[in-house]
Image (cartoon, rainbow, N blue to C red; front, side):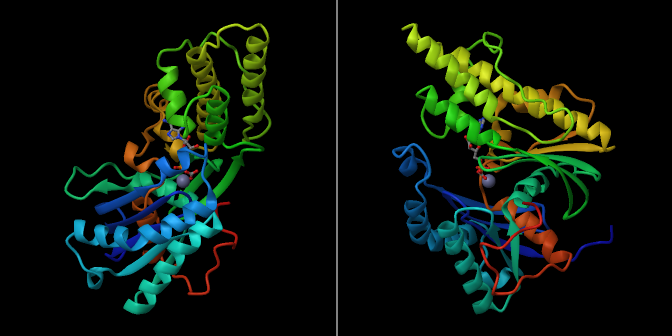
Length: 342
Ligand code: KG4
Ligand code: ZN
């Protein structure tokens, strides 16, 4: 690939319940990253409350952008372009970030770059802290497994910004299944970290929960495993038996990871991928990370924990490659439009 133009990108991410801003240099070196999480506010509702989320973004967006600039010891004049998550996400949340980005772009007369949130997750694997040892850059063709709260997808990436979607979930996303099963087990929101914690003391082989292999496709399905946990819990309750939460959590987690891991490895082999990339909130899962790192012949890129769940560093990285490869956006961009990845 030809040498890309150097640039400093300021990115904004407000697709769900995190107000985030980050500044990156040349797509990889992270100068600052600020994430204002609303998790505690939404925990009392057992999930993200969209109207509350957008109001919190309105309150947080300006301080978060100011903090990202001051952490990087920069001013707006040092920024070459503004990137922003255009979608997918909650419309009332996205609009706050998009309007902030449009305002900055207009006021500074700097290009505006729309980034797909899923593409952002994938680019989290390119990011390293400025000053830290540079991590090896992912090599194409790359098999990317994206596992978040809203999406589960396998994409073959043949070059920057070039995706062939091989499959996606037919029902629940992997993270959504973690969240729903956590609720069945009376574990707190968000479900992923709670299930992981509970599972640490549990036996992953105690319950043999359904694994939907869908052998003729690269799609996923997690509603079966979710329902099989529900039936098990209902059965135990009927018998007035103690609920072995830790074993249920560990067995559920193992069932999801088995399918994610094996399908990804098989797809990588089938499509001749050189490397594997795993990203999105569920890639923070300790057992999933360990499985991918230790049980395959492929080099595996998984972002550091701070970049697995929503953040703006990943949007800044994807935004840089879009900017450097000539994908500027216009100010009419619509948060409800369709995107290359979804
Ligand atoms: O990428 P993300 O922050 O937001 C979306 O784009 O959806 O992902 C959030 C999802 C939630 O469903 C959460 O339960 C899950 O990621 N998650 C985890 C873990 N940490 C977060 N799932 C399993 N294990 C974890 N440690
Ligand atoms: Zn996300």
